[in-house]
Length: 329
Image (tube, rainbow, N blue to C red; front, side):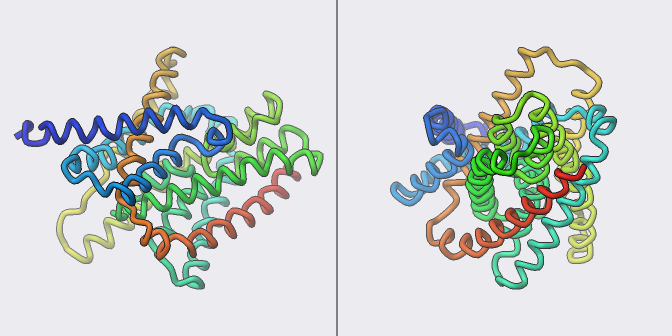
């Protein structure tokens, strides 16, 4: 039975996503492209490959495994980025502000979705990515709400590009308003979507400013745990009412929590931590290749334009509000 899944086409499919992922990571180190990030690069390569050469059907089992299973494993490893004790003891104010950011993102996206009358799944995923932690949140939430791979890929692509543009903008806006490094760090951590984008924007601050940026951001990453379980509860209730049967539970989220707890109470050697971080990135990028291959340009034209407008509006308002909050705390 195991051999059925681990055949040549399965292995070659995984190898295909691995090769494209390595290429994407290499390209992401080049000037200009480095500001976009490997995740977005892999998605774009996947989309271009699909439009020019078509979907490699013979490799579908391995590609699907990368897009779904490896993505979930990467989310589990993402738990190593969290130190729950540090966040709870030093970042409780940031947790409260993070809750506000999440509520604001979901509420505004819901309102804009009613106005634009667009794809509800993508809008919901973008709300999670904006409010919590970008691609990681979108990936986790998409598994809970059973979103289509195409919707997940479009959402991650939009959040990566828009977030990168905002992160680069912050490096110019900060000096214009003569912000001190701590204020700038809090602002970046509360409003930017991805950890990588926070690091990109925080590069212009001193060590103390960067530390505040990461603490603010990781407090929002921490909130992925309660938000995920809340969503699981509501989705399970809705699903149970519809079918009256067994409810699918994304068990990988429990392992994500266990890893976060492990990382809190056990000191991981620096070398091993670096390897885990690189492995997490590699698996995420491999998954992006698979997700990119599931997207057609026609779908992007039909599904992505209005969600893009909504994401930009939400991101601008979030930046303005958190700017004033960071200035007074």
